[in-house]
Image (cartoon, rainbow, N blue to C red; front, side, top):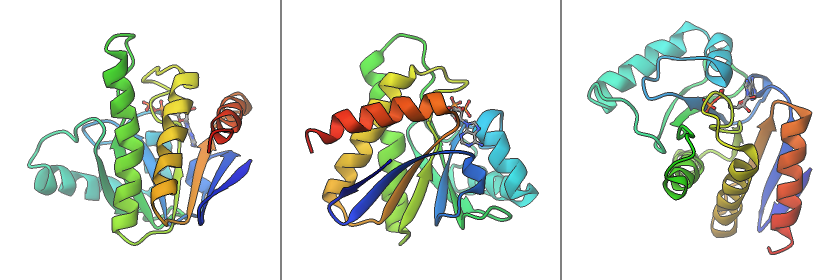
Amino acid sequence: MEVHIQKNRLRLISGDITKVKTDCIVNAANGTLYGGGGVDGAIHRAAGPKLLDECKVIRKEQLKGEYLPTGEAVMTKGYELPAKFVIHTVGPIWDGKDVDEKGKLLAHCYRNSLLLAKEKGLHSIAFPSISTGAYRFPIEMAAEIALKEIIQFLQEETFGDVYMVLFSEKDYNIYKQTLERLMENV
Ligand code: ADP
């Protein structure tokens, strides 16, 4: 499914984000930036070991040894990936508590990734469904937060192409239904 928002395009696709050839892809990382399971592991495997080396430098120099805070984003090169760059962001862990706060943090992941991509002069970005795997965020809620934030950004900015890459038909259909509903009010 594809929609046009101002001069931009938002497209939902189902598939593997490590195969997507955009200017950048977004990694649903954890605060250590040292890799993990799910999409994070897949991105590190496909990018090769230099990705981890650069993540370690970012931890040491840019983050002064601290974890990347939830909702924030940093950029590395894409190495062996078809995408030129990877934006690493940390989604909130769902535990059913502080629902508003967790939703805001998830929105920050999308906004900060888009702002970083724009600041670096990039024109295409692909997101996975952040926080809806190991971090257990309910996908219906996550889809609404993600798409609202992307739509708002594309209404305000001239950016280019935003892809949401959904890893299953079930996830794709949830995002599709949510996007159809949200576009009724755009
Ligand atoms: P989180 O810890 O943020 O929940 P996960 O990687 O566990 O991150 O899951 C986030 C989403 O990414 C899930 O919907 C999962 O199915 C999806 N996913 C896993 N591997 C890939 C991949 N290669 N491409 C796109 N999405 C993926």
